[in-house]
Image (cartoon, rainbow, N blue to C red; front, top):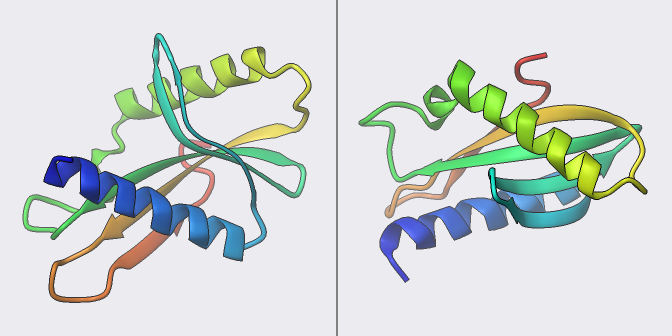
Length: 119
């Protein structure tokens, strides 16, 4: 597996564990359709939460949250809507979250959760 893919998998594993520790019921990981992929889908309270995970080894090229552009937010919204159409049994308000993971080789990873991006 490529280093980039390994880092992505690590980030998603850390994010999923974090969400579960914070009261989320993880419904699905890495849901794919023709339009793209949703990293994590979970339920929390009355929400269906769609979480994008961005992982980096350092912030030298910018913080992972900087990758969440207006274009990326629009794509996240579109994918969330497609997921809801594909899962008509699911009910709840939709929320978009982002989890940024900075995982240096020589230190413990740092995780930052931003709930309700682009709301």
